[in-house]
Length: 233
Image 1: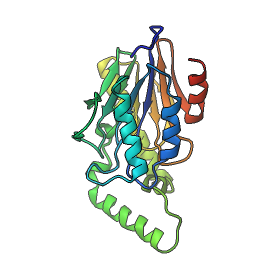
Image 2 (image 1 turned 135 degrees about the horizontal axis):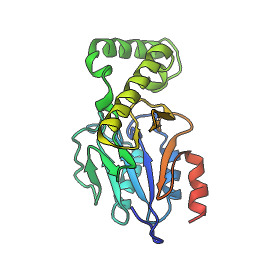
Image 3 (image 1 turned 90 degrees about the vertical axis):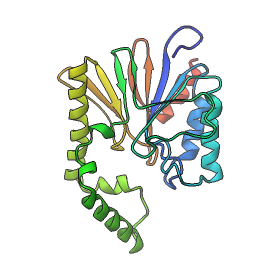
Image 4 (image 1 turned 120 degrees about the vertical axis):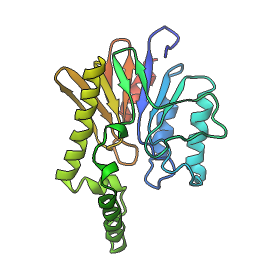
């Protein structure tokens, strides 16, 4: 995870959902343009929306660019609940993992393993999906289902807190100073009992984020700020 001057330069994103009609492929295409040379890219789960779905040309181009980048730079693909167990037929030199760590400074995992709500409420999730699609049919604007879920603020906040607190407990038990997840499609940076929890949100809604890690800092940044980082290298 080193660039030419020996300084760590790692960028972490989550929940691209390539293949979803809500994936901001043009924004991520520009993000890839602005990634500094020799930097590491970590895709923290749900990179593909559906591994069995045929990608449109624009989305396939993004996947191809990620694979091509792995031939010259370190690219780590962490499995999420959408792409768990995926193996691409052509994957370049991408490293596929369930989690990754940067020493004891930062543990990186998608976050679905910390979710004690959705996996055990399948009936509620099915009903929620039916209501979501019905809402669109009667004329509501199409949005990603996670964005619709945010309208149920109490339930959504409960889910976010559930993932965050389980992640923090994991860090406490294993000695990590910080953890970054995706899964809940909500970017946030919080410290609880001296343990830092960072969620990088998703690339299915406006204002996508990434996490920038160097030897001396861990910063949650909006996508637009990557241009400034690129200009400084």
